[in-house]
Image (cartoon, rainbow, N blue to C red):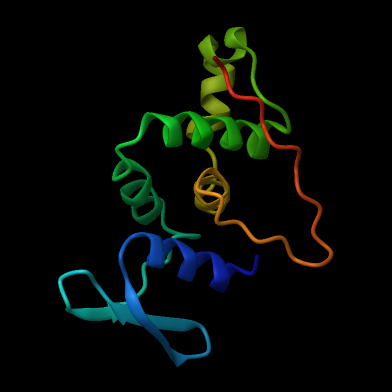
Length: 127
């Protein structure tokens, strides 16, 4: 997915509507409260993507999000020991905003593969 496609997909999921381009790189839209403004820069702003992640009140999403984040950041699903270690947690806590966006979209099954993009293997969820 292109960065713009990711930004728009997250915004739509968060209730933004009537998204349009004011300039080539700055899409705007209408918020759920009917005000309008520029879409949050989720891929570069940790506060914006964290707000979207924390707004999710679904345990299943949270488990999928963490599993995808592990796969994106670590290249594999972490073991329980790694999850409990400071090194494993450090890597996840320091994930980039763009990595968090990808995990968010994949956890919601909103990620669309680009033609020449190779998808990571879907993580196995803990039971």
